[in-house]
Length: 165
Image 1: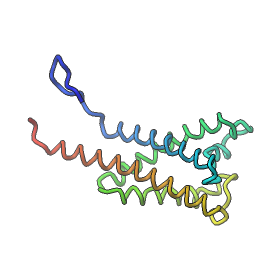
Image 2 (image 1 turned 180 degrees about the vertical axis):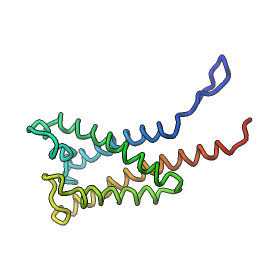
Image 3 (image 1 turned 120 degrees about the horizontal axis):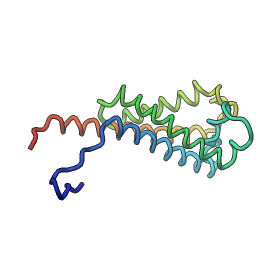
Image 4 (image 1 turned 90 degrees about the horizontal axis):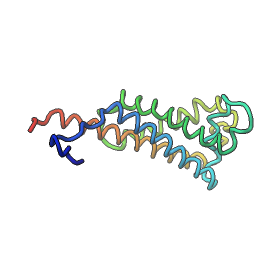
């Protein structure tokens, strides 16, 4: 980061809550898109569009418009998941917490919320490929969000405790 030429000062870094917002939004959109490609390449039978099934009418939700809207909704929901991580787990170090967070999110969506999605088979009726691919995506999402938030929190704490120069 370069200093301002006139004042010689550096720009103020992004606040942690704002960083959590952008991390959650990017994480949801990115991993939702990866999930779409996993479905496209038959690694999972669950399309991102499944999120629209209980709430939207019409067949448009199964086309490209529904896919894009679904991925954007995943980004918005991911912001909530990121703030939940921030509120509960930001002080914990390491990628293992994020991995566990991803597994918990997977279980919530695939076991607890499963009845909300009519297009999703019951958990034990899903194929092994679908379960493993989806679990891996949730783990990667959890590590991404968790590690990003924890790292930035720890970094800001260190900066607070350093003497000003």
